[in-house]
Image 1 (cartoon, rainbow, N blue to C red):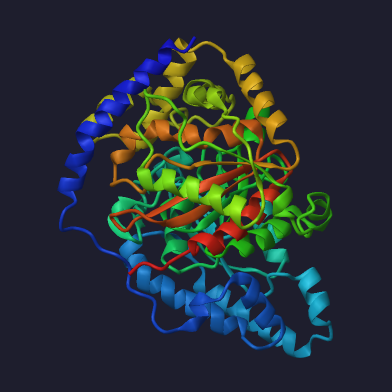
Image 2: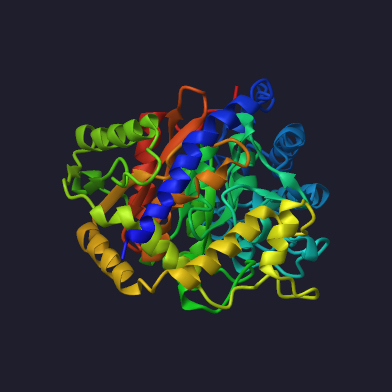
Length: 513
């Protein structure tokens, strides 16, 4: 059943041939975002900003203006913004400040009903924000504006958060690189010749550049976690179905899709993930998920793998393997966690089994079925000639879908077996430490030879598990590297607690220099 795996070795060969060429072609073109000035406000977590606003130690207008200025400073370099609402945001911030001068509620009451009052946030374009662009990188949706807020965005607004903008995604969110024909490429703030990842790459780049406090992203195959590690920040893929995906594009009624796609938070500071997740799930579910309870890490069972142990796939970068080892060592030595020897050997087949499950999702919007009723083969030829209105990224995704549909048999039974084995070992007090990707951020367009790295992220989606990506320093080229912490469904608190602990070990987000 796994003979199809050998096709992935061709991609491995392609990577080792083309990678030096991409590196050579990028020589002398590297840029990074302007360094953050001495403005200390840009180094305060969202949790602390919210507290200072409630205590009237900081005005909402002031912090919103600081972030607007930073966005304007870095966006010419990273190209992450699709459309902003700066003037409306400043007006809303002034309203917050006026409200607080007259408010008779205590700080505790304000924290309970408006935990993000006056805090600026940024939103991935695929999560509908009323009045702003909702094209999701598609030319046939260019100029389309969202008429309503998606439910996740609405929850942020209800909590008092102030959205500043919508950020870039690949066309229809179908790529590990945030590029489309409307906004263009989003660049990595640490090196503009590198990608910011996808599909929440706009959010990743803004956060990495110190131009956002909390970002709202979505994840069906690593689309929160990959941009987070590529840009040196934190990202949390929540458990399946605990955050509403209503108002996300694309969307569909297939149960596999509802189990796989999640909307979740990204942040520069680990504790802000917990705050944002509590807002996104609501008070009742936050209590059920025990998000307010302290986690005793000494009771934790820690499983880990440095790679998928598949010779057919690209080797995991040494700095990422080291980060896995160092994380495990810290949890054992400093927290008293129990390290488990069991290895999930079936994960070497994740690319084959899990990808088949994801691409078998039915009823997703087909961008080629519209007014012109385009043909995939024709569009691929047109793309090779530079004449297609669809990005090569999207066409490749559609082609892979077609290949799996025709040539790969159903593996739902194998996927279910992998899931049961995985969850039975984790239980309600286990975490699995694993790479998010095989390398740090690759050069622009290099994702074509790195697509199999998604196999490190897809299992969490297929199994309905929460997963938190954690920045763990830098590689020899000065690019961020990171890992992910996976737990059983509805054990998000374990992932978040480990992320907060590892932030102390690795130092968390470090601004570009």
